[in-house]
Length: 202
Image (cartoon, rainbow, N blue to C red; front, side, top):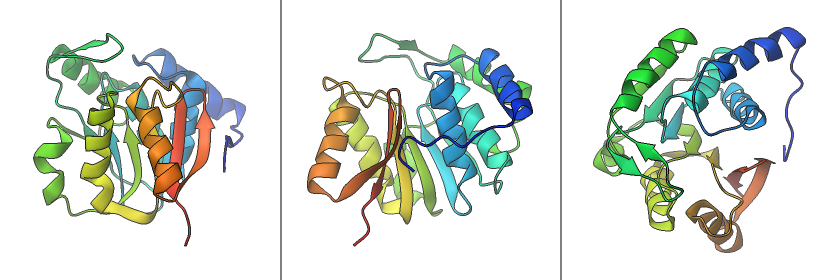
């Protein structure tokens, strides 16, 4: 599956391009298509997104799920005032845009927004996670915390995708290096700055 992007029909590609153009976010179109394809492949459990901002990546997870098995998508985003390690400024106003984005792209019935951080409720989670998309705090401490919060809930064959995972100075790169070197995870897909991994088969 590494670096593979399923071919899209011209009609589907045009529809997804429209979704991309009317949403705000930091992922590129090719990265969004990767998320769409990963979500479309999910046939059980649920999809969890950590860090949603204004909903661009959420839309592509939602559209992929809708074109696949209708796997529920949970967007974990506190929408509190926060400045990221790359200088991004985030806050409550992004929540309003997020809601509008879900409605405008027909994702409001497949996506559930949870306005809390992972550490506040993940210990009570009771649904298996087949796809985990981590795009929250890009510090090493932040991304490791989010990963470890959801690790107990991952299905055996779950895919974990990280944004900004190709910059050696950022947390996602460092965590992936640890997981692939020491913990038996393997890279299964990468597009631009997104890298997806999965626990290696024993």
